[in-house]
Length: 215
Ligand code: URA
Ligand code: URA
Image 1 (tube, rainbow, N blue to C red):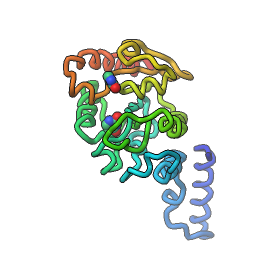
Image 2 (cartoon, rainbow, N blue to C red; image 1 turned 60 degrees about the horizontal axis):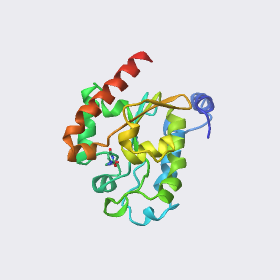
Image 3 (cartoon, rainbow, N blue to C red; image 1 turned 120 degrees about the horizontal axis):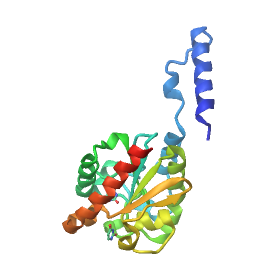
Image 4 (cartoon, helix red, strand yellow; image 1 turned 30 degrees about the horizontal axis):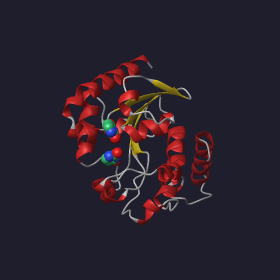
């Protein structure tokens, strides 16, 4: 991957060329894509695991490429597969409200999933599918370089923390992974079925909010 500095230098070079009349590149900005955009193109065409056979759209993720906080869910559901965007169905609408509860807009954070393609009938993603897709998540994390990752639900928490512990055991504590704080919490779809767990998620959101102030 080209680093940002190199991309900036090339853009400036091309702008100078254009100014001097040496090239007629119309829109320099549009001709060079960022590492995250390159990765998205790769994911959209990925056939590394069987989930690619069932998808309408691979769901890469969206939000601020320089986000301080990333939210990582499990995998696309019906609506996400149709629209190609993460967390846009019922659980997604709840996630949007959870973010707003600590004054975060979807556009300022980055939202993605452990697997980028919808498992058929919304079954759980299998270990081999999670492993196939994991390099994409890791590259997103490296590129965005967030301070905090909120792991939504069992699969996200277990994948990021490389453990088999239950989400009920994992949540309530803050972990650290290569300098990034990991905050596991319940998945919004789980909250829709168990509204009595909202209080714990609210506690986790307040922790995230406080950690952002302390940055
Ligand atoms: N559930 C998830 O885990 N991810 C989505 O994108 C939507 C629902
Ligand atoms: N089970 C899950 O898969 N996720 C949760 O958040 C809680 C229970």
